[in-house]
Image (cartoon, rainbow, N blue to C red; front, top):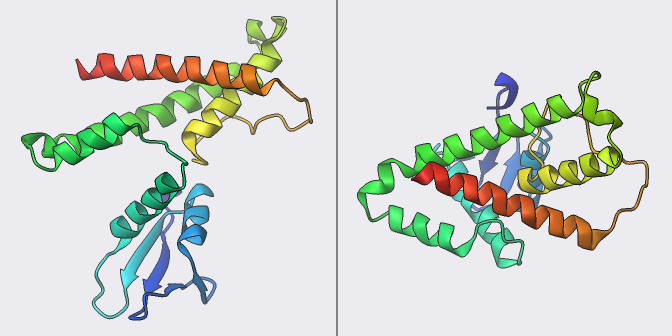
Length: 186
């Protein structure tokens, strides 16, 4: 849980409507996704039975984003996840995924911390600011709104960068990240 805070409690009524207990109003799946992107942990429980439905609703949010073409999970990863439900790898997959995401969050935090240190000799390198903005945009796109970064928010001074160049850089960095993950698998 983020910062040891209690999760936002969402109750599901028999009508399948979702009720935010903090604000006393009904919410949608998109509202819940926005809470999570803002750094809130949520817990969704069935009002009548008390069953925890959080996993079911989080999977539904992911499925809706994937069906709208907002693909984050490559097809081979989804295939491997399905396979893991029918093999002995089932016991290892959750720990591996949790450790991978934790490493990604830690790496992002450490990198942003190192890039923003005052006596960083790279700060004087020509083009460093543009590279730093690209890196921050890349990390923001990968992290999907996670708020565990200790680094500063991306620069919002209105400087326009070349979207094609940004995309090429993001693809290059993603390929490097995938190569690192595959080496961990070996």
